[in-house]
Amino acid sequence: MNGYYYQRASIEASVIHRIFPEFELGGASEKYIIGWRQTTIGKQPFRFMIFLPSGYPDIVPNLYVINPKKLYQRQSCEEIPAHSHDFHMLSKNSYGFAEICHYTKENWHAARSCLGVLHKGMLWSEAYVKRQLFLKSDDN
Image (cartoon, rainbow, N blue to C red; front, side, top):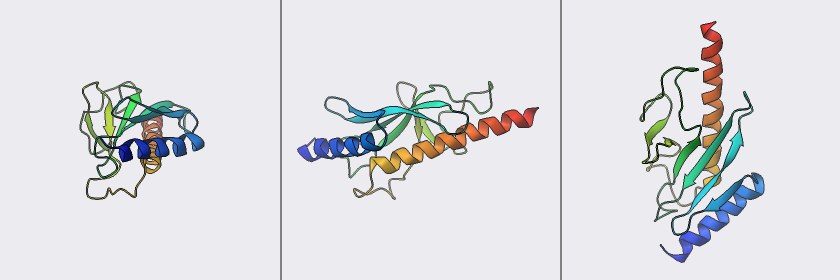
């Protein structure tokens, strides 16, 4: 990894931290941006991690939901499969964290930012919680 990778990671993390102080840069050689965010609907906390692979910013970063580790299709029912088009989940990594779809490889370019990725993750969490609440109230 070159110096530009570390410089870009540092700048992006500081921009996100300025807006969302609960997010910070982590990792020794491979960098990631990690932090907590609470949904406006239902006040459910989510912990996100944006992993910056070598080759970033030319390669799309990965967005993971670290917490809650298990995501369910309905309140207290089946866990969402590792790959789910309906839930915009790509897969689970080796730690079992769900990867959220945000930009395709074809739509990603170096002018995009981790702030945009984080915004998509936050929007995803709001939709997830709203769906859970809707399904729960629909069962009654």
